[in-house]
Length: 188
View 1: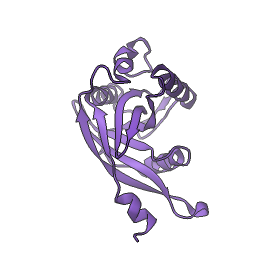
View 2: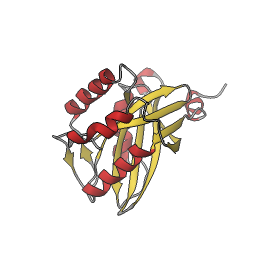
View 3: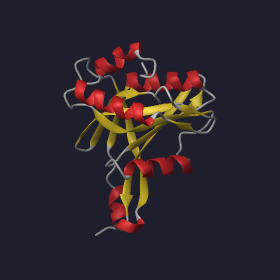
View 4: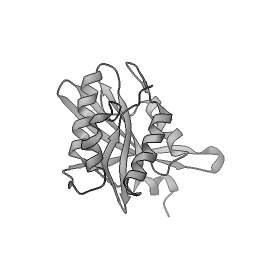
């Protein structure tokens, strides 16, 4: 039988990313460049698939820097709860996204530490990074899992296959992404 870390790496999921959500991430990465921007991913899990159909931005009290950003955590938690309730439980938190302006779509040590912190509270969170500049932004996604004995837990961040799709307007999240324009901290 393979070691637990090998088992985690051998079971990647396909992350289905709404084309609308990808366009929004890239637009907001461009608008704040050269500073980082980011937020949370909303959607659902279905077997070997994570489906991302909505997102939220960093929140009104977020701090943005050249090589990091600190989200408004309290605001994001309230947005997760609001999306969950508005969708009758269909939308849930899947992970975080952020930009690497003028960089590459690879996880930094700080990104790994952030994903480890999230994985201690959320099962198998995603970390999606859009990197680039101008009109050219590329996404990459990882799933975080904890591995090892309880006292020596470590992060296994496995790259995930990312597929972009055009969602049905009837899907949960489709209307909340499109209708998010009234709040500047919701990315729309």
